[in-house]
Structures are given as C-alpha cells and as structure tokens.
Image (cartoon, rainbow, N blue to C red; front, side, top):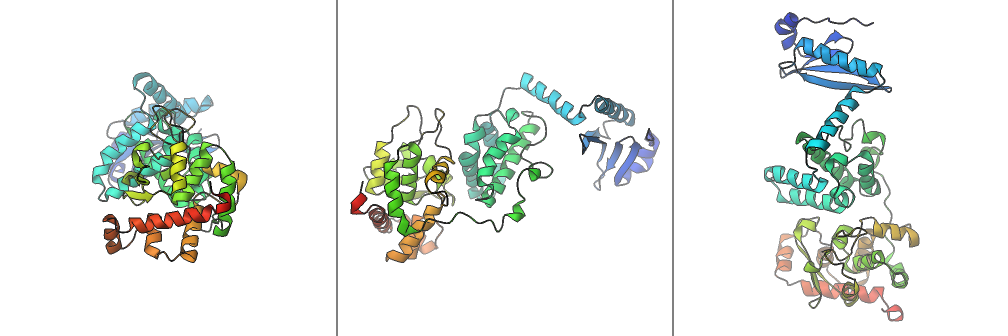
Length: 401
C-alpha cells in the first residue's frame, strides 16, 4: 500500500502553498500550485491502461481532509472497476438531461458567436465561422442537442474533408471544440470535449502536419468536359442537377447546396450569393447561362423549405457530400471543387478574357480599382459573356440540351 497522508495543513499553509509544482499526499492525491499562485487538488490514477487526472477543486475552498475524502471515493470506484471521471460525467449528464432544457448545437453556436463576435476585430472572421459551421457541421449535428454530440458525429463531419481540405477541416474542428466547451461551461452538456485534438482525435485522424504533401484529386482536363456534361444530362437526381449548376457557375459546393429562391432573379438571369455564405465574406453576383436557368426553374420546390436543392430531411439542403458521392460513381479521380480549376484552365487557354474577369467569376479577391469597377457593374456584362461561352463549350451543338 503506497504511503498516504504525507502533507499537513500547516505545511501547506506555511510552505507548499507558495511553492509552484505538484506536492504529493500519497496514493495519487496531489496539491498542484501554479506559477500564478493558484492552488488546486488533483487525483491522478490509471484506468483501463490510460493515465488520467481528475480535478478535486480549489485548495482555497476544498480542505485537505475533504480532498482526501474525495480521493478515497475515487479509489473505491477504481476498485469496483469504474472510472471516476466517467462516473462524474455520467452523473452530471444525468442532471443536465433532467433539469436543463435541451439546446441544439446550432443554438449553442449562435450563442457563442453572439458572445464572442463583438470581440473579433475582423467582421469576416464571424462570417467565416458561420459559413463553415453551416456548410459542414449543421447538416450532421445542427439540430442535435449539444448534450448528445459524440465522437462519431465529429468524425462524420471531419473525415470527408480532413485530407482534401485540411486547413478548413482543422479550423472547423477548433470551432466545434470551442462551441462545445462553451456549452459545457453553460451547463448544457457534460463530459470530455469530443472535438478536442490532444489525447482524443489525435488517435483517430492523421496528424495535420503530415497532410502538407497530401495529393488532391486533380481537376478534370477541360477538353474532357463536354463528354462529361453529356453523361450528366443522361442522369437523373437532385445531386446531378446541383453538380451541373455548380459546373455552369464555377461556384463552390457550399454556395450551391444552400441556394435559395430569394437569391435568384431568373428573369434577369442573376444569382446573388449573400456575403455570409461567401469565402471572402462579400456578396457575389453570378450571371446565369440559359442552361443554368432552365435547371433552376425545373427543380421541384419543397413546401416550407427555403433551400432549392432539398436534402433528405424536411427543411434541409443537400449534403455537402452528395455531389462528391455521385462523382465517385462516374469519375472517381476528380472532385466537384476541381471543376473550378477546369473552368480556369479553359478560360485562360482558349478565350481572350482578361485574367481579372476570370478571377471575379471565381469570386477571388482582386485589386481595389478593378473591384470598384465590378461594384459599379461595369464588368458584369463581361462575366456574363464568359459564362455563356463556357456553356457553349460544355454543350456543343451535338449534345446541346
């Protein structure tokens, strides 16, 4: 039996209370003193082969005797084959479920953004937060109570983009972790944060620093695009039509799947994507070609659903993985996002279109003078001409829809 009760209240008060470090009382109980002078009780133990640490409270509030009693209770649980931390979390979770109204992940996210948004100097930062959550997290856990969010949900969100868009995936993981931490602090959930990296997801996903040389799926060579579009025409389904519009507009997946009727002026052949759904945080006007307009008019509208490309569940939009899943069936070497590169290569190599017009079609950031001209509408006509040329290239007379 390891030595116990090594410390004394007098020793803690006169000497150890101001000495940074960990001071053992024996049998896994420690007084932890930080450089700042903060003192707390820690119980260290091994459960199921894993070393764990459980906080027992501030030494300014919890006495030595009380800390020993808590450590003894934890040792009793270990002797019974139970993990003290897990038992603590389960008890707290039961209290939360019983006493607190459920808060969805989307609600918790909005609460977090409302609380922290004003402190962010760059308003684009809030827009980027909201955009990534809306695109990747909400379809999986948006309507789920934060108390019910588990590791399996986080992996379902992250795995599809962890190696293809690692920077976005890592930022998304951190944002989810912050929201869940906030929800825990507010008493809406209990237990370990299932989105944390160190000691948790680090064992389930490849390290970010090993993804720098990850080879992305290449873009489809643009000469192959007309044949590919002919294949799309022969297929049916909402994912197929969404993919066709994505290609025709050179847009991003998140922009397409969350499209609403309110953003469209089909008579004027325009699609206005609001700033909060754009990567650059600025409203983007997209001129629509005839084929895009025809597709958008033909999409059945789901009553009560604002999204044009409706998802499987009522009131939701198409999953961000739906188009990729379809691509894996007919062109597994390529991804939907790669068509933006196909469009760029085609425009730069086969048309006289100025580079900055191509960049604006892709909603890339451009110089201030050109940006000012764009906002006056001077270049919208040139971009419309470019997108009409793209349509004509994709659908030669032999397979024009």
